[in-house]
Length: 159
Image (tube, rainbow, N blue to C red; front, top):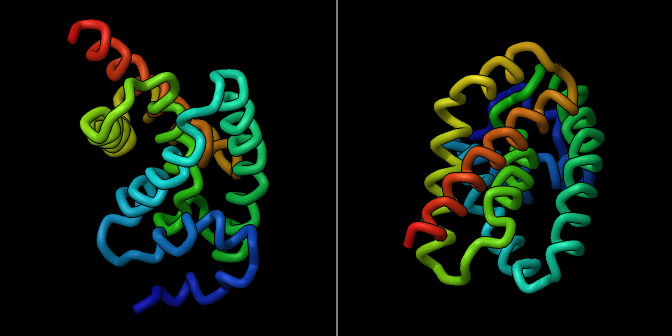
C-alpha cells in the first residue's frame, strides 16, 4: 500500500516516474535497493558506449536529476523521501563507469554502491546532512558512487 504522502506523485507525470525509478521506489521493502536494481537494465543499455558518451549521460542524468528530485520533493512535501530513487540510479551508473564486463562485476558494483549509500561514511554523511533540495538528494549518491567506483576499480586492478 502506498504511503499517504506519496499520493501526490503520479506515475503519469514523467518527472515523478523518473524520480520513483520507474516505480521501483514505491516498493515497501528497501526502495533504495529496488531503485538500484532498476538501474541495472539502464546500465546494460549504456555500458558499451565510449567513456565520453557514458559520462555525458551521467552528467545529464545528474543535472536533470536535480530538477526531477526537486519536482518529487515539492509534490510530496518532504525532503529526500525514500521513494525518490533517481539518485540511486545515477550513483550506480557512476559506480559502473569503466567497469569490467560481466554479471559478477555488476553484482560487486551493486553491493559496493549500496554499502556506501546506506552506511554513508564521512564525507557522504556530512554532505547528506548539510546540502538539501534536489542537488543535495543527488550529491550524496554521487559521492557514494565515486567511493564505490574507486573500490570496484581497485578490485578489478588487483584481480
